[in-house]
Length: 355
Image (tube, rainbow, N blue to C red):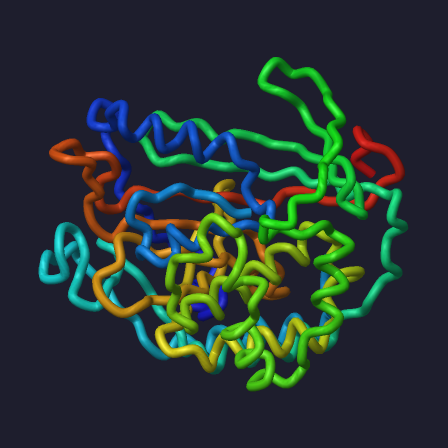
């Protein structure tokens, strides 16, 4: 059997939750999650630092053909370890002692995969930066846990200088709103994100040291500045955020190729980072799932889902490693999945335009 076809055909279906077990507490969490556009940059440290407890799910084009093909072939050779978890209970309800998901998972050598991602990233071309008065269009899909959960489609427009946003309200009306400055928020305008990315070190060791101690991500948002966060957890959180934001901001314009390569190499240096195969985004596209496992028994695992040949960010996926309860009520059973998918983006002249 062809190894590449095997890789592309792999499927690890997560167990689905029964609808009648997802009670009002779950609905409250999902209502809050849906109210915040995924991928808007902010990833709550309260969630990250607690390992997902009380999970409020807030977040937030192609290289040269020869390098892309090399990426696919190298990925096949990277499948040096295959691990099947049958839902053992040694690590708590539904998980394992190593924090593995309760369904079958195939892992790859992180050093090989992330180095190949870096080589592909270095081959990318750059594009001119948008004007401050241009708009970034984004379409994405969110799938919440639950057997009866239907995917939700979102569209949003953000002015490049960050002064305005636009989108459809729950009644289907198109609205353009002003965005006042908020010095206590950790989110940045697209223009400010691009500027921050340009200033980051291109050496992976220097980049890793920088993000571990970046005061922007330590002191902000202001209401969470009192919380503590492990530097490795912060490093993976911020590096993942940069990759996600670059897709939304127009990858070629926002992300310098050498910086993207340094991000992948820096990720490979973080203890606890791993790579899983055939992780699916919200529309079912198979990808490479890059994740970080902190010390202890995390409630869930979050994957940054990358396209297997181009290593572009497809979206994200969060898998509950054990049951989550509020009091005696089961909110999310082990194996529940919350996922997102980036499906379209463009730089446009006016809000409402898609190309």
